[in-house]
Image (cartoon, rainbow, N blue to C red):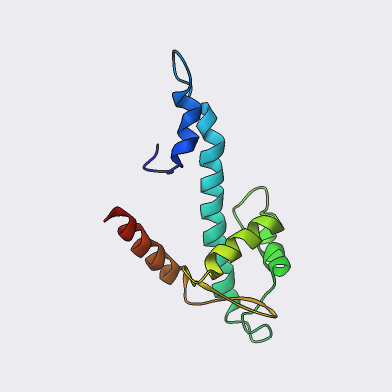
Length: 129
């Protein structure tokens, strides 16, 4: 299960502190959160990449606009909250990740979803070495 959906070690305390037959269901909510975050990352990057070709916005959109776009197109159910979108934008626009740019007018994609995947893959390899 950990290979598919990696959890923090503290999440596993929920099962290692049990006595007798271990019930792994307490891990489900943590796993669902990670899966949801992954879908949000993908949906958000796809949304920003698609909007980058828009001549009116020139690819720069606000979190609220992203919310409205994802609300109707995303496979994330229930729809992502504005807080979740802002947290993901903070991660993706951080200097370390740098997949999303930010201006006074909003956010925009820097590269594609594939570029973001390569960046995360690089950091994954760095963690393993």
